[in-house]
Image (cartoon, rainbow, N blue to C red):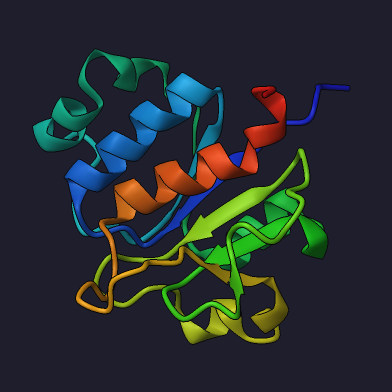
Amino acid sequence: MSSPRMKMVLVTPEIPHNTGAIGRTCVALDLELILIKPYGFSLDETSVMRSGTRYWKHVQLSQYDNWQSFLLHRRPLRESLYFFEEDGLKSFYSPDYDPNAFLVFGRESKGLPIKVLNGMEDRTFHVPMRSPLVKSLNLSNVATAVAYQALRTQFGG
């Protein structure tokens, strides 16, 4: 049996630079990157590779045709799913993250689809911001902040 491992899940990502940067973060933190189709770009675009630079070849990548296919094949436990939305009910500081967590992010322009979030309101989190001048942060910045917060106990004090 393999050791526990967190995973980043991007549901229908639109911007190749964000996906490349998140892939790079996944390599740095030894996380699997799961992409849910459709994408707003081709994975062979140079912009994905450029953002991931020379690290893209090391991304441990899984792809699924849709959310239902992902659920069917991966069968994640409800308590291992963490959804991130700007209007999530709880702060991303609040949970004790499962070592097998699926950190789920939506598309840059619209967030996660209602069908994905339906019934998961208690599993939805936000990254707090102090200034009311900013509505949201770039997806790759949020994903990196979330990953480090989720892994905080593994880095020690």
